[in-house]
Image (cartoon, rainbow, N blue to C red; front, side):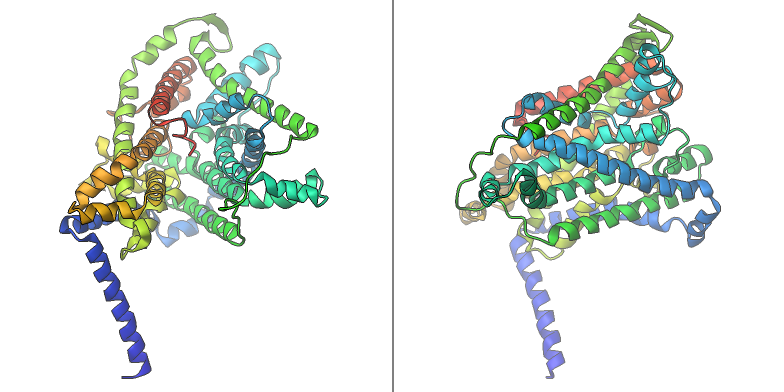
Length: 555
């Protein structure tokens, strides 16, 4: 036997050996069947819609982009807004993260609460509220300051997206800043470094993973943002809204799929850039020796700077909810400021839309939490054949804009053999798999904290895999599953970029109903329904805090 033949035989033997180890690990045929079923489900509801969108347009459709100046503008505008909003949101998030991780900044509790409030709101709430406050008939610009300003356009969109998405950056960056040991900063100062040098050589380099992750997440949210551009973008085309206009105005799914496909390209590029940036250096800050120490008092100039920026940003966040609540109680916005409850009467007649949102979000959250737990169970330890592919499929929706996924489900499940397009299930499944990455990663982190010896001990006592899963893992992961459920529920009940493409006239959800009211210039009813939806969302979050702790939407 030649050398090449021996190498091929060794490779073949290694593959079959790994397959045998995987089958032996799965053991129970029912467990093997569960692994295969989970893999097929993710392939069907994640990969298949992606393939449908990418392959639906022809090459001629992409070439035809050059004949549509508005679409070319939309490409440039989308990339421009992604850059502008990402930079400002991450810078503001970094300032908030610094304020929240310094021990002597006053008002930290208030800043922390305000910094996560926009996460609980429908994605268009910021734009809607700022239109009420700063638009042509705005409460602040027109009524109080007697100014004639037009907030519609890229400036208003830039402000709305910055305020909407800086909480994501705050959470990602603060997590990293909290883990930077104070003794590293002390050592730099003892060597003669001033505060600027410490910040430049210690804090910023070690905060690189959090900042890179924040930029990735914010850029993806900005690219997929749908509600803010619709309400406050004016005549400023971007890819997400142009894709919707092709379906709503022209019933042209091919053009919509082509425009949505263009959104996927920068999303994947962002993932690759983030991985390369973060992986180039080591960022270990948590070690098994030494002490972290107490942080030094914040320099006075930095403390004043943090307080001013966080206070101004907090006023902008608070104004979101103040504007919506005032709008729901005002007779005619901009003309008659007398208080009234008639908008609430009309909004309560749309309670079935809120109920639909609760049903869809509850179903999506339950499925995402269960599927994330099962997927993490099957991929734990990375010992299974195809576990890497399963891991990739579970994480793929994190790189898919909501508009892309909505169009993908519309194309994939609009006819035989799986015709879900006119049922509630298409909404539940789309929202479930869009939120699967968070549920999966949360569960995977939980499994990593559990020693495999517990599973081995249960198996040695004769417990089958199902008893091990239910009696060992599930009780220890109850809080993890709860966090995945609550977060998925909140993300689903406030979603617009997916639901807008999949709802029907017979089954509307609250976010789509609100957008329709705003489009019809029924601002008071829209504000009342938005306030009602916010109340429901905050109620669910409060129950989550009570059940599994305040880390439910932060960790």
